Length: 198
Image (tube, rainbow, N blue to C red; front, side, top):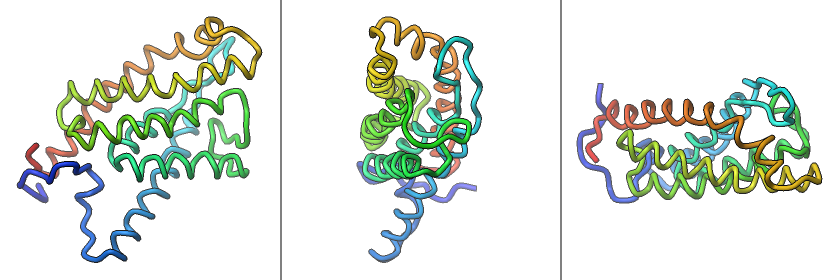
């Protein structure tokens, strides 16, 4: 059943549709969303499949990070990914396959924060309300992750960018396309379910 029918205010993201009557409640809501977004990413990271010959596994955390950034918006999305990063570095075992701390794939996790800026800002402009615009936002968010992850991988392994791309980019493009397709269905459907006109 639809919860709303009016067009949202400019700059509204999905998380803004959760009611918060007072400033204190809005703060509590935002804190819960940030913690929940970090936890969701950590849970999704446990879906981890090794890729032969590469130190970078296929995981669900990339999709989770992009969805969190889009649904929460820039500020909360970046905060959620920042919490995910800091807690993992501090020892919370919620990076891929229950790992924590730094490693050769840490650049991708740092890239989640940049992706949160990209997809959060695009969502604020309504990019998550139609399948094609959602696809474009997810592609740009994925590029932001790779823009940090691949160079970090190259430096960590002492290899060139071309070799790093062979290890940490090209083998994942098909999986990324599937994640984009999933987001194309999920995000516009969420707006439609809430009955909000764009």
